[in-house]
Length: 369
Image (tube, rainbow, N blue to C red):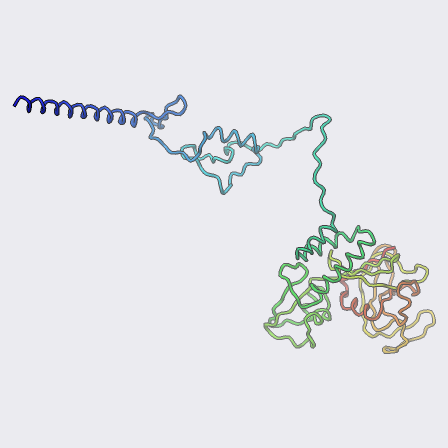
């Protein structure tokens, strides 16, 4: 009996000890959970003076440190308050963690270079010819065409020949064919609607009706149907003639199209300057101003051939001059020489091409030494 009482007493003491230990642990946990949260040496309080509840922050560093880093590394002028990847830090008055406070204003500054310090040398860009070749190699024909046309303006003769050949090839494929590219600024595709005519479309595009018919394989200008898609070219074309090289370059805006050899006036008598196309005649008759002989249309001895493009001078030595023009010839040996009375001669096939490119009252021709 005495042994049983001793055993019960020991059990009671053990349970009491466990209860006291549990109460101590629970009290410590409750005290820590209700203790005011401190940031540094300060206690976080709500605007009413009460202890604020703990708030989880998405920033891993104090906002002041983030702002200081931004200002030191990027500068205030580089901050983007509308940056899409900015994360607003909760409890930080809406300041974004990767941008300067909105109260800071951009400041323009100038950094002076230390005396005797040489500026860092910027990497030299590749030459226009190299850049143009690279664009063509990667299949970017539109950019390659643009860059090579710019390079042609200052290219050495051997490079100029290569550039002209490449651009002539590109023009044949991109301009003078039915192929279209939606990114090409020089062409577009038009769907024929009610009232559309080839003549009207050509006039609006500042190109000739003959050119549109040739590109789109339209046998009869009147044979268009609603819904038909045709390729348009944004003109006008222009020509630049170099007397020293006896060469005519055809351009569409700032893009080179092709070159043609020309014959010019004897003794340099082809006035330089700018001209505008003022007349166009197919299979014209002609009167020789020296012999007064009159040549009828279709006369195989007619010296000017089957096409005449009349010019009117608008600037330079050409100013106010008329009676000059671009025409064909029955003397192919005169091409590349100075044998005409001042007009510009072309081979029969070449003058037909120029006739189909240059537009009355729109296309200009520049003749330079």
